[in-house]
Amino acid sequence: MSISAITKQAALRQMKICRRPGTAAELITGANFDIFTINGDAIVVLNLWGICTTLIAGAIVPQFSFTPTGGAAIGLSAAMLSLDTDVAGTVYVWDGVTATVPGPATQIGYADSAEAGWNGDPGILPAGVIRIVNAVASTAGVIDWYIAYIPCSNASQVVPA
Image (cartoon, rainbow, N blue to C red; front, side, top):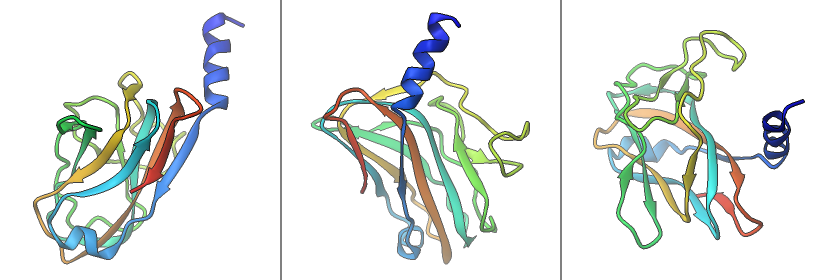
């Protein structure tokens, strides 16, 4: 086994996943909202995704953004295409590239060859807030958000915002 493979296995044993349940109110307001808070120390982001739990009615176009503690907001992704009429079970995957539009996966199941995966390098984020930037209101819809990460120290923690 190579040193690279050993290192990857060790890192994956430290991986954590945080879930932030969506609410009916956040998409219908057409406003920005926080999804995760990174406390303490930096993290290595392995993946960031959402799962629609209630039919979306309205042409919302959310975008991932990050604001480091004491810093200015930066875009993590391009704005998604309209999510109007997306049904429960639709999975939105960000591939780790800031210019990419996070899109719905064509098939459910991460092992499926049609599933969008993590194409970018893992991102390192310091303490701060990950948020959804959205200027378009919907009349219905809920998305639960997830983040897979590796803490950079024992002080690193991600909590739902």
